[in-house]
Length: 525
Image 1 (cartoon, rainbow, N blue to C red):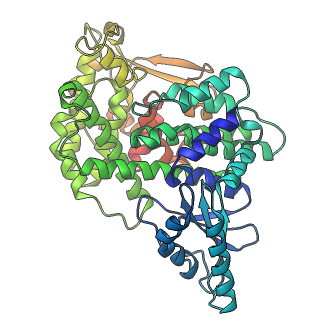
Image 2: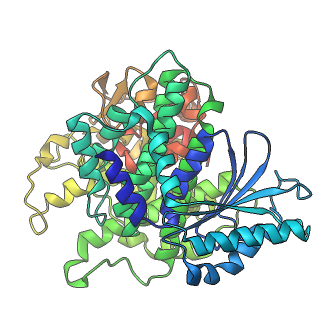
Image 3: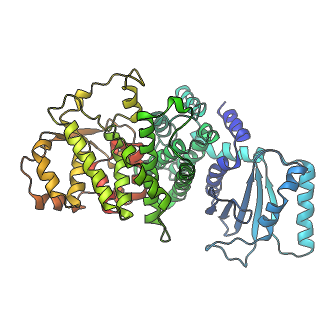
């Protein structure tokens, strides 16, 4: 039955949506993927470029649907580029030959196959030096996907039910993150065996099956939900690799594919955002107010994170003045709905500082800090919800929007993010602000969940850990506070080795944004 679901997905999906699962199939066959086209126009007719297990170069062009004569004539220019133009890449010797593959999820009619054979024969006879063109059709592609899943296809009824719930989602809403994490960690990335190949195969399978599950969101072009999903998968792979003890060389290529989808979907979200005049979505009569402000906060915080990533990973990074202008114009629109909003504000602060807007960044940090100290004081009748309460939870408790009831008084006198904010302010020499508010904040408990195993930081939920609570000191040495704020002592290697993933991860799992993670990212932006 699961095979039929895969077949239905492959038939109905577009070439962009089966590109990453196909790349993972190639990795499983010993290829090294050196180029995957992004949202930009394809280069020289090549969507994917690999080096196979024998050191040969391979170039692939992906298509959707049946290839008949009219379609073949329409794409002939792209085919000519695929087979005639050499691969331009630092890892490729342009003087050496390469193999070319035309891939489609449909059928290739006999007349097209005949023309391809004739073209290959003519190129060989005339010694033109063009690449030989081969075909991978939908039937072959389906077999590759099913075979690559191996034993990791859900078989138990509850796992298959969860698969279908995700697979049949509308694709227009937020990703159901709890269910998505549950499926990956309980169905695919679950067993640890003594055979080295098993965890490697599990990671490979997780990339492919995620491609299936995200079909509804791909169809709806829901770039934010896709970003959440690929980030969640990256976190699950990181945890599973750590648990299984396999070498980085055994999983890093799969992780890079996942990371490429994170960046691609955020880049598309950025283009969409900068191409619009506002943050309205759907019927404007049902939008606006808190919903509008929340959407602006999420989108701008996420895009600021993308720019921070580019700054750290691309030496040729040029700040995007359009985004900076939009963020500066939207400062008054931002909404700190609760502590789950903190990662958005944190990344916005780092982004503004990166772009020499320290005054605006400091104002933003101070206002969030003062709002939290005032809102969550021990005398407050209602507090700001902790980071385990999502935006959807908060909006559901607004009478005009939803019917959910939350006792906000439970948050008075405690905070999950206040300690991290204090250390941020200390790193920025904000002594006077802290002195003015220390007495009030000293009655607010610092709350933190500490997993027993550091890799479980990358879980959505875990019962293996403990809740830690403590009050700030009634009197605090400024020298010791600044020393703690700048110290890297006690920061796990798993955090410091995965900075880029962590910056995205805290956006989708804000309840994992502890003071060590925030401090590490804050010192490295």
